[in-house]
Length: 348
Ligand code: ADP
Ligand code: MG
Image 1 (cartoon, rainbow, N blue to C red):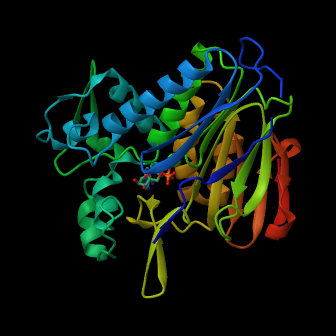
Image 2: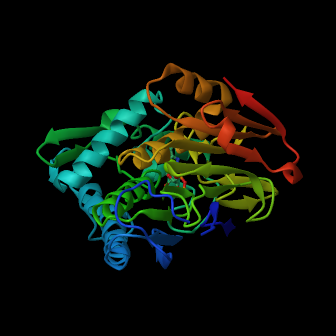
């Protein structure tokens, strides 16, 4: 089993383009954090840079504590351990995040599903104790999986049906990146890049006045080898891929993104999905939820959702049969890496 925390390698240059407001800045300040099982890198310049980085770090640790389901005292654990059918007070922040998660389930026909927790545990992904469960075991667990088993009771309280437990692993880093954007903006940071392991937010470009370059990992090669580079000055970009966390047994690879229809690792023909949206607070959560969901849904359904206009985003898809697809909204800002050898297509 191998784990690549930082999926989007951020290639950093230095500049003066100001897009997130505040005074002119001369040098970038950097912080590295380990939280949410991920190596995170934050860079900022302009405004109250130091205070911004400090507040950002504290916020990451707070969210790690609140949203983790392996910490007994987290808000998520309080909900998961409450007696079935009784409303637990989870607070408005978690309530709102669960409400959004349920919306993403509805919009993705259930491909995004925070109630897969018992299934992820059965595969050992939560506890780092990998095994291949029997289909009968998975089917029994799947009876408790689905958005219909989560009930918003209003005013910060939520109840779960018997046997249902939630896991926000597919959305927590995206939500954290939204909070990073809010903190940077409120401190007047003019240039910033926040890389929460495959969840990237950029603002303002680098100190040389150029866009940030966001490297998108080639899912078929070693960590750091890229499928391509996206240029952005005001964006969230979130990647999900089966290569991020997996184990092997009897020559078969099992990864951590589960198809709720089967309870098994999703096999949709996609090896990586990157969802890109503008840097508006809220889009980080959306990109994270959608990158996981679209990985499950596969190329056709992913592009259908993109074309539907229900959400405003663009895509970089890598397929198992060797294609690299980029939607036309970002094609002029995307440069495929030729050494990766994919057949490159712009989708409209
Ligand atoms: P990562 O957290 O590795 O960056 P994702 O955002 O794609 O990647 O989230 C994967 C995590 O989300 C899994 O480890 C698991 O906890 C949970 N999960 C797995 N499958 C799904 C799914 N179909 N919908 C929602 N959450 C999922
Ligand atoms: Mg996700």
